[in-house]
Image (cartoon, rainbow, N blue to C red):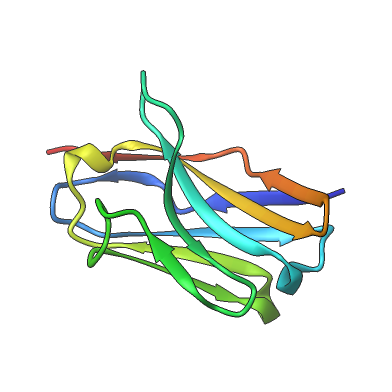
Length: 119
């Protein structure tokens, strides 16, 4: 059974930093593209950052230059380093694991971790 467990969320002041972690189990981690998404109250879930199985990264324009996604396959963990946080970054952050092989898709989500940016 695949599990993704996020940690590292919390309350931080504007301009501060947080590092989110997502540890995976029940899957061959290195086969998956990993991603971070977020959902604020009243909004749809949106992409924050992704990192492919070979380490290629992609970011939402709103977080470019402030957030960094990375992965450690040996630790079966994906990270999201968030710097220069803004109140508009407040949301529940979700970890995602995605693998597509021909017509078959494996797509998993974590339970989410709350990030609140407020003074």
